[in-house]
Amino acid sequence: MDRAEKKEMVETLNDIFTTSGSVVVARYKGLTVAQMTELRRRMGGAGAQFKVIKNRLAKIALANTADGAGADLFLEPTGIAYAKDPVTAAKVAADFAKTTDKFVIVGGLLGKQALDADSVKALAAIPSMEELRSKLLSVFLAPGTNLVRQLNAPAQNLVGVLAAYKEKQEKQEAA
Picture 1 (cartoon, rainbow, N blue to C red):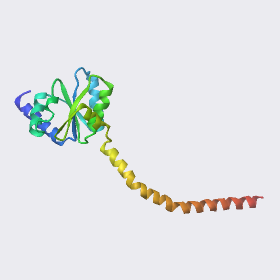
Picture 2: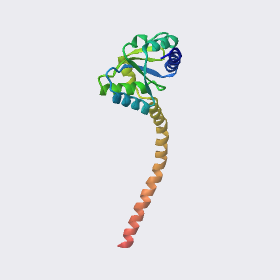
Picture 3: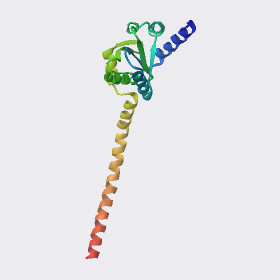
Picture 4: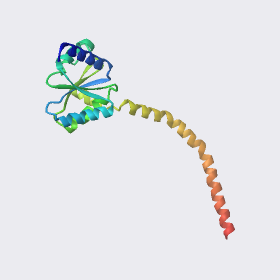
């Protein structure tokens, strides 16, 4: 990697660290190509990405963006998982770490704050933004749905009474 490529990689990492909702730092030593491909496929399916990075370049980028927070996480072969949604990358990484013992979450970044491995796992337990939005929408719609149901109840009861009366009349005519 020449100097221009390193500079471009630092700029890319600066962008990742500033625009991502969260960044999960993990060690991947010993993963097979198939496992790494599966991890990337899962990340892509959830709207996140996983990137293998050079630790030195990550530390330079962190010094520029997060005041060096989390620089101690970048030792040994390290990769980062990131997404716009703060929870997505943590969820996928935590799920993948459960399936293979060679993928180890060592920490992460949430904004300019460094997180330890337990904090990342706690972040993974939080519902995603889409889940929260759907729950909030159902809370907003529930009163309107209940109102419509209550307004329809008398009409439904009337239809039921008329249907019973019609059946009674038909039985009387048949007898």
